[in-house]
Image 1 (spheres, rainbow, N blue to C red):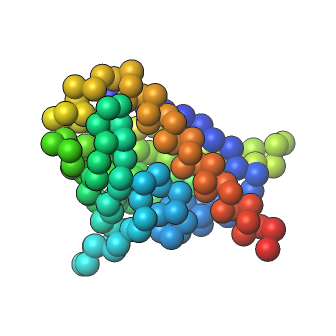
Image 2: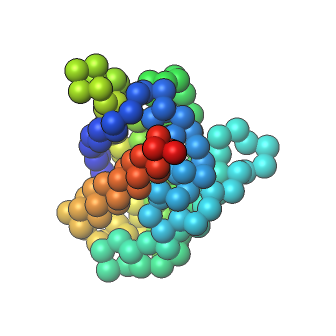
Image 3: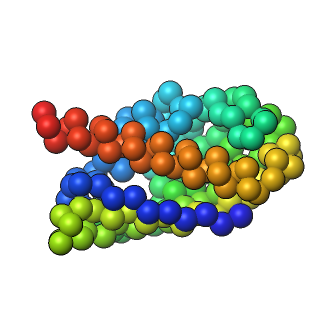
Length: 153
C-alpha cells in the first residue's frame, strides 16, 4: 500500500529538522506511543509499544522505528516494523523537507509504502488509508504544537 502527504511548519528548515530528530518530541507526537527506547548497539533505532485502533482491530503493538539515509536537513528514511493483534506491519517512509522563502515555512513531504498481514490485512485498504492519514495529521499537528511552544519560550 502506498500513501503520501504534505505538511507545512511555520519555522525554518533547520529547526524543523532538529525537531524531527528529537526522539522525545517524536514519542510525544506519535499516537498511542508513550516512549521510544533506544535499541542497544544500534544507531538511530528505537523500540516502541503503541496502543492503536485500526479499523475494528485495537490493541497493543510492539516494534522498532529506525532512521536511516539521513541527508541533514533535507531528507531521511523512517522504517517501522511491528506486530500485535495477530498482525504484522512493515513500512518505510521517505520524509523530505524544503524551505519556502515566500511563505517563510518549511514544507514537509512524505511518501510511505507499507505491507500488512494477518487481521489488519483483512480490514481493507480504504479503512487503513483513512486511519493512516488521520494519524499522520495528528502526528504533525502534535509536532507543530511542540515547535510553537519551543519558539515562544
